[in-house]
Length: 351
Image (cartoon, rainbow, N blue to C red; front, side, top):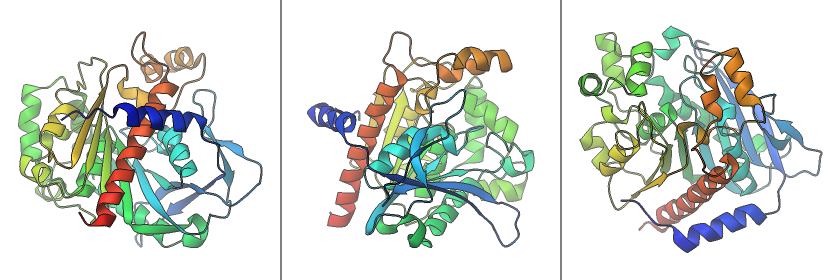
């Protein structure tokens, strides 16, 4: 199932490295519900029609951000939309490197903080409503499409979701995959070392018959026409039947650095084997760790994180003797760009 991109990937990498930076706009806002019980912090990156000065977004003492122009006017015309979903304890800034790169290529990119599972909001009550993660993405799509004057118009037939870790599971859910809580609970008895099992235990989403039914429900949004999973978790709870019938193309990218708690063979590779062969692609990056898909760390950041919370320095580590994270991410961007271009062309052609 692995696909060799060969010369095409090399061309994409070269193009990515040499491309002139185009203006990128950036805006942040909050989406409310009528009940105001699940406010969503969202940010949107988009092609900007501006010559104004850029400023660094998401740049701090630990992580490298990316330049953009706040509140810039959008470029006219319709643009493909990509929605990003972060992992457990992550946040919208984790994939800034991807959002910025795609926006420079003409995409509108929206990222969200999922209540209960984000860095500054680990509310147990909100986290337990795990099934609302794909619904968060639906609301983001609605919000972006409703404001073309702010972000640009969205091409209705070119909407994709990219998710990292728990966000990868979220992407599968909104694409039509179904989760079986009982299947997952039984599997965790066999593989208790998986971080997916420990995180799931902390969240405890299937603690009532009602929540169990909601977690097993259908959360597909038919507007989503392609998905990308970046070293996902919880995949072993997704049903064989729903994966075999997944109605949209899927790119599954795995971290190849050996891991006891999130091994590729038990998560991403296992998922890829159960997806339709004709419309899914699996790529394992040998020198990427689970955290290679997060923002680049600045010099000294690992030691700073370790001093603050012992063990957190792992966020800054990639494969030993491997490529720098920046280069790994250039490869990932090229893979995603190529996959989305092919998937959207396939959709538009009606093949």
